[in-house]
Structure formats: C-alpha cells, structure tokens
Amino acid sequence: MKIKLILIGKTDSKYLNEGNAEYQKRLKHYIPTDIIVIPDIKNSKNLSELEQKKKEGDLILNQIKEGDLVILLDENGKQFSSVEFSRFIEKQTISGLKNLVFVVGGPYGFSDEVYKKASSNISLSRMTFSHQMVRLIFLEQLYRAMTIIKGEPYHHN
Image 1 (cartoon, rainbow, N blue to C red):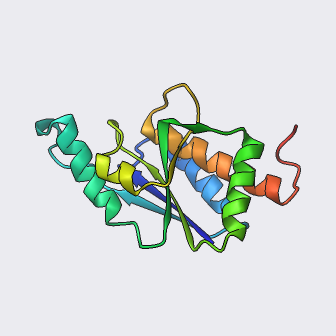
Image 2 (cartoon, rainbow, N blue to C red; image 1 turned 180 degrees about the vertical axis):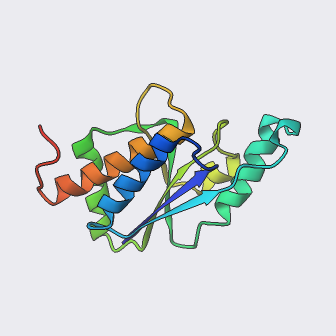
C-alpha cells in the first residue's frame, strides 16, 4: 500500500517545512508516502468562498485515481487516539488497498464534490489548526502509527 497526502497550498514557514521533511524522511522506512502540493488558487481574493472551494476541489479530484480510498482531514470527522489510528492504518494495509489518500483542504474546507468522493473524514482534534500546521501534526501521527504497528518504542502508553 502507498499513502498519498494531498495538500492545498505550500507551507511558507521554515520550521514547519523542516518538521515536515523530518517526518517524511522517517516514514520512508515504513511505507511509501507521496505528498502532492496543489498550488494556492490565484486571485482567490476575487472569489467567493464557494468558488474557491469548487476550484480547489476540482484540483484535488484530479489527483485521485479509481480505487483510491480517500480520507479527508476535516474538523467534523471521526477522532482517533494514536493507537486507534494505527489500527485503522494497519487494517487498510492488510486489506490489499493500493492507495490510501489523505486530503488537507484549503482554509474553507472542501467542496461538496470532494466530500462525495471521500470514504470518511478524520479530525485530528476538536481544536482548529491552520491547514499548514495540520500537515506536520498529521505526518507525526502517521509516523507514530507506523511505529505502533511495528511495536517500536516511540509511542508510550
């Protein structure tokens, strides 16, 4: 199985980029992981929230292939503990799934079309994080899940 992380917009912050790179490097030892960054929509200030979500949604859907299992990182999604998330990842791994795709939307979330394509939604917290910070938090949790699956001592109960 391969994990794909689809993101809207680049991360400008040096410390977040360094953290993202560190966890991407760590993940390579466990599972193939592709990160696809969709550029920010140009002239978004001239678009309504709905128009911006639609344009971003079309770009997201262009990155999804037939047979991909799509999970949205969404504030209203299901919450997992780290151990529960590792079990979810492990279940997908042994299911024979080819691509597990996680999507971080832009500042307004997702279009209706993207919600329809998704199998489920996951929330990292009841708190709100910037979509740039979510990347680092998610990559760390994905790494943590892989170490839990492998029985390594990174996670402490």
